[in-house]
Image 1: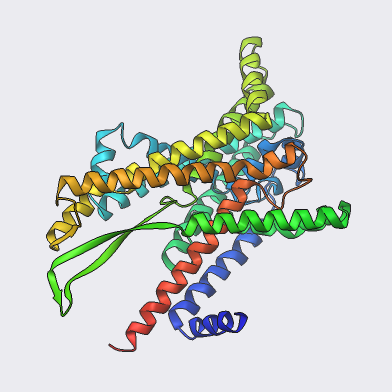
Image 2 (image 1 turned 180 degrees about the horizontal axis):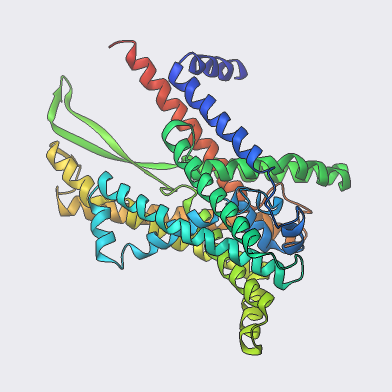
Length: 422
């Protein structure tokens, strides 16, 4: 088995395109980690670590920032503004007719929406930088900064966030992985060795076996549901071979939207906590303080976070499939090609059948995703597991990105094999 894997890797590396994409992704990794070591003027290195110490909120924010939030570096806020902008536009698409029309225009409309997302990222990055400064100052972690220093600090954090957004788009175009999810994956991956080392120092042999075994089981389940799919057979009446009409299939994955619902759920949960912490630090008046404290305490509770993550992952999965999976377009394409699903009339009936099948599969996949996203946390809370390798959401993102990279490399290998005969 290992010999087969090594041979497959060797064959892939013989392809110039694959080598370039891997090399480019490694360069992005090196530059990203280098930027994570550049300090920001006006914020001490341990300031953000002190602010988020002792709560899960900091872990949530750090996950979607690329694992560098508590470093107080140039790229500290990372991808948070970009993901928040993406979530905002995704939620507004069904509400605003112009965005809904752009979504239906195909690749041109998606490019326009991507441009709107970049524009929205800039003010959100400025706002988050100012909120972090105000919160740190309100809690007395840092002193008030001079105006020019404050502008430099906000400008630096904002620039770092825009650079991270740019890196994500560069990886999507010229590297391997899904851009934004690839950078989050790197942040999660960088923390695993330290986490293993910390846990193994305090675990006895039996606890180590349970720790390793359960984490491997969770990884196996995530891989299984990520790869599971239903194949809907498609017949082509206009393509005839010796044995009759040619047929193929439409693959409907159990988790059609991948890890995006998990990332969106983390983003949506962490943002209200950040705003609540900001109001608490400013101490504006008693009523606002009470509301902010209620929100912060409620969302900081591990059970509320688990329930919130569970519900949001399901909702975002169902929402995402209705936005991304355009069954009307697929139905029209099948009709133009003289194709049909056996037992289903072409046109609207096909579209309705595909939509119903996708929603049923997504409902099952979303439920499994939601359970896996909170499972490690629940096992620790009931005392069955002393510690987890990473959070449930971290598992889903990590495994999802690895599988995405594997699929990309396999598709490039197939293209390479075809090119030999051209």
